[in-house]
Length: 301
Image (cartoon, rainbow, N blue to C red; front, side, top):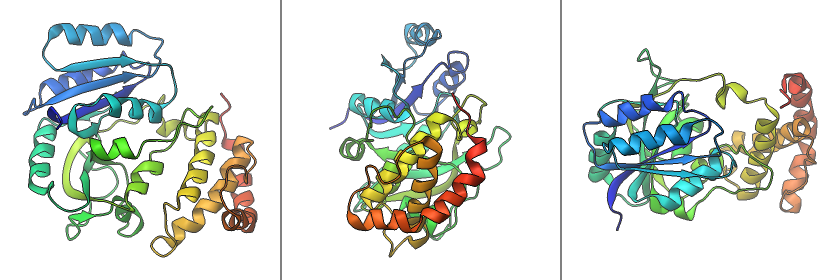
């Protein structure tokens, strides 16, 4: 049994100047039935000092851990191991939370937790001006596979995702050597092969896209190396079955070639099975074309 309904999890890296905003949003939650687990992914600023100040104020149940820099995916794995909440609610250090977000999650989960193969809750993200990021979710699909939202029902944009901690302990992120960015698709969409989520058209997270954030740096060296690894993993896991997501199934092979070329990787390296290697070779012309179109955009760091 878990000690709390919810773990709010925040991975952070050099965000001492920003994280107090989230702290204030957590203080203002209508439900305090949560812990705040912060994993500092090797910050070189005064993040630790800022968090220690929060802890001394003794307003929230805060657990702070500092680890060697390894990327957000490794911080998530670390946080899952430390979580004492039944649900794992990832809120980034540059995010905000609406005042009733935790209460909404707890109430909705209590109403739906006994549904077979349900893994968690998905809600909306909004900009600071209140506009919904992307599109809303279909009202007639309150319970569905998370991947179906994007690849069957044409939902766009970031969404809030709160998942059962027990499930995340079973489906951890791979931690390949030398990769400090690994997209969350390798776990979130893999779970869609086995589990559903309860969807709600209610904003929970307030999201801001900063220039030092991942979204603005998707063509950095770290990012293209991570994307190349992402598509290798998605192919090997068969995350997108051809019968359910034929477009995404083909796209994996094309993007494996594209991002491997951008990253300087051998595109067949690490690909499991003769058939998958054959598909990569078959899709090489399209992948190479996309590589040529984007190679000048890579930001070397």
